[in-house]
Length: 240
Image (tube, rainbow, N blue to C red; front, side, top):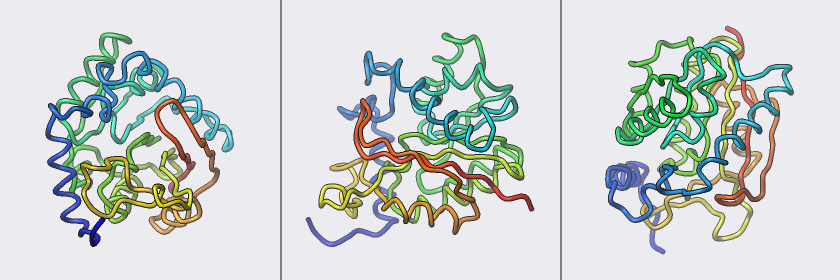
């Protein structure tokens, strides 16, 4: 309870949370194997299956070229994606998670992952590490709910658009507002409700379109093994 806090203040709280690797739920929230336990191995196959279903709506599959995972965490998805493409880039705001992702992928697939570190309040840093217009597919799972604010989501979407090749695709998972008080977006005290940025379904669709990413299809998953109220949207960057 209390007045909403500014996006800058929420970003400061988020940066403090994600830098505290000793926090009780940090490993689980970062999707490390040590935090999720037996669930870890099933997360990646489920996310990639939904991604392939959505891509099939455009007659596509995971491209053989360059794939970027925005928010790779402890590598649960990366271990499934890495064998499907020539180059996988794992991006995260935690150096520890990038190292864990790299280790998991190497141990389980023998592949290497190129890693990119960004700040909580500086998603555009990715553009200094990855050339614009060179990524064939961007995926992001269990990330947009963790962003500090709607404003942060807009900046990430704009950056993703700049990274994609013309007609490149993105599959983004978001947490949808179910109309209840508990489903409404977080507006203060980031640490109390980490996964607290939600969107009305039509609003997220429109928001992506406004940032230059063309929506094509949507899948709703009311409940998965980690949480509830998830949507996945398939987007492309229009040529030109």
